[in-house]
Length: 136
Image (tube, rainbow, N blue to C red):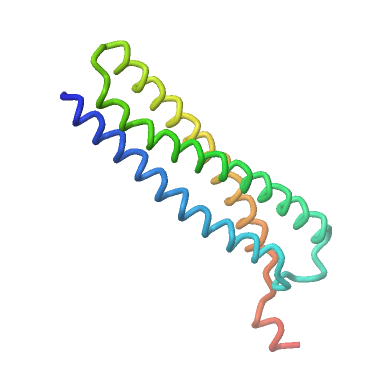
């Protein structure tokens, strides 16, 4: 494999990650709106407390999201420096850096997906039912 292919692969990875992060950013906006809305059954025990917990978790996700975006942007810019590499040690440095960025990205995705699933499961179970509203 030539260095230019490696650079292209690294750029492709980062481009894919940045695209996924942009989608997550939109999802987080939706989740924030969802948990701040009035579409939940008001008689649900501990509803306010649970929604406040989720707001806090989404706040933490937002902070992590910003960090991951900065890491990806910086890493993407650094990849171009691989063109100047003329040693195996230099190539190895960029490869190791890429692996670390990939690990950080994956850890964020895992945490985000866990929180998102928890919120959607809870919120889906307590949404007001239009059918019930019409029958009352």
